[in-house]
Structures are given as C-alpha cells and as structure tokens.
Image (cartoon, rainbow, N blue to C red):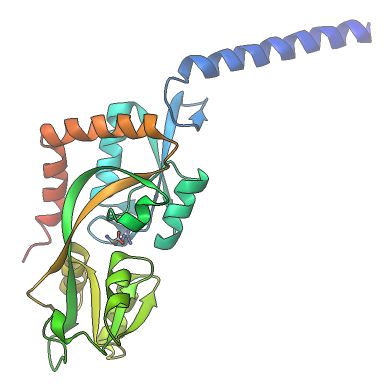
Amino acid sequence: MSKKFLAIALTAALSCTALLAGCGSTTDNNTADSTDPVSEKATLTMATNAEFPPYEYMESNEVVGIDVDIAQAICDKLDMELVIDNIAFDSIIPAVQSGKADVGVAGMTITEDRLQSIDFTDTYTTATQVIIVNAEGSSVASVDDLAGKTIGVQLGTTGDIYASDVEGATVEQYQKGADAVQALKQNKIDCVIIDSEPAKAFVAANEGLTILPDPFEEEEYAICISKDNTELKDKINAALAELKADGTIDSIVEKYIGSDAE
Ligand code: ARG
C-alpha cells in the first residue's frame, strides 16, 4: 500500500517535472540564459553604476536615467523583463564576462582595450570628456595645463585612463564621480576629468565649479555584452536600430538632457 502510494507520488512528481520542463522550453524562445518560469519572460540583467547622472542615478531608491529607459525600451521590443544590478563601475565588465549580468549599460565608452575582453553593441550616443575646475583661482585653464597636476577621476573610467597618460600628473581615483567633485571643492585636487553630461549635472548641483570650454576626446557609448553572446547582441542591435529610426532614443535623451541644459 505504501509502495503504491509512493508510485503515485513519484508519477505525479515526474509528470510535474515534465510539465515544468515543457513549460520552460515553450517560453524559452529568448537567448538570455536566465528564464523566469513565473513571469514566462526571459530576464535581461543590466549591470550599471548609478553614480552617473543623467545616464543612471538614484531617485528615491530607484535607479533611473537615460540608460535605464533605453534598456527598458529594448526589453519591450524583445519581450524581456529588465533587471537592474547596481554595482561599482569597475565591476561591470567582470560581471558581464562571468555571466552574472547579461549586459552592461552604464554610459560605457567603446575602447580598444575593453574590446579585448568584451563586445559592444552598436553605439547609441556620443559624448566628450571635459575638465571641471573651481571657478575661482584654478591653476588649470585648459588641457595643456594638466601636466604635474592632481587630477580626480572615477575609478576605471576613460577619464581615469586619460588622466593616467598625463605627464607627471597624480591621479586620484574615486569610487564615485561625485566624490571626486567634493574633493575638488575642498581643494584636495586641481580638477576632475569626467564625461560631459555628468559634469554638467555635478556643476549644476554644486556651487563654485565650472567646466573648461575645450572638450577633448570624443567618445561613443554602447552596451557591453559577452563575446559569446552574439545572438543576444544581434537582437539588441536590431532593437536599437528601430529605436533610433523611430525617434525613441532621441526623445529619451531629450527627456533627461533637456532639463539639464543651462
Ligand atoms: N564613459 C566613461 C567610461 O566608459 C565613464 C562611464 C561611467 N559610467 C558610470 N555609470 N559610472 O569609462
């Protein structure tokens, strides 16, 4: 009797498993390896670093910004569910390489060096690097004055790379761009090298700072993705092309940068 019961239970368990597996495979029409059997949608986990307004920043405990809206628009096209993983900027590429995250969306610049370890989608916007200084009494008036100066940067960013190439300069690396800006206000460093839009946001939020007029280094932002994930990359590129063509990307950028402009 107990044997019979066990047999029934086993059969039930087996058919459940088969059913679940069946369910899984019918919904598994996306390339992302993480499928959520409850929502029946594949998830797209985006690693980011929400210290970079207006691309990604915190607003009452929520990560918001241009990159979040773009990632959401891509997910809408691909019928995926967006999951945001907010981590240190220099942990994003390792997270994507190890598969902890599917993509990195973080105002990330395509560089030759990064292309050694990671792939990028098509670009979705351009940016420049700029120099922030104290409005009064700065010894830095242009890129040519950087030699021998103390330069603040966000750790692992392209600003960090440029600063490291400046002759005789001391580079102070901060976890957050905002921390570099605070150090500048306290005269602990001579300037900050950072991307143009976050620079505008930081200067708007802090009195007594200014951005030097000559930007240098034009950059292209793209979504980083593992080199093994070409199928997902192609889908994202197709979604991006549609979002560019129908004006969605432009209107997302305008929504955030329009309110930032002086
Ligand atoms: N564009 C720069 C880079 O790729 C800075 C990006 C920083 N992004 C961030 N979310 N903190 O290195």
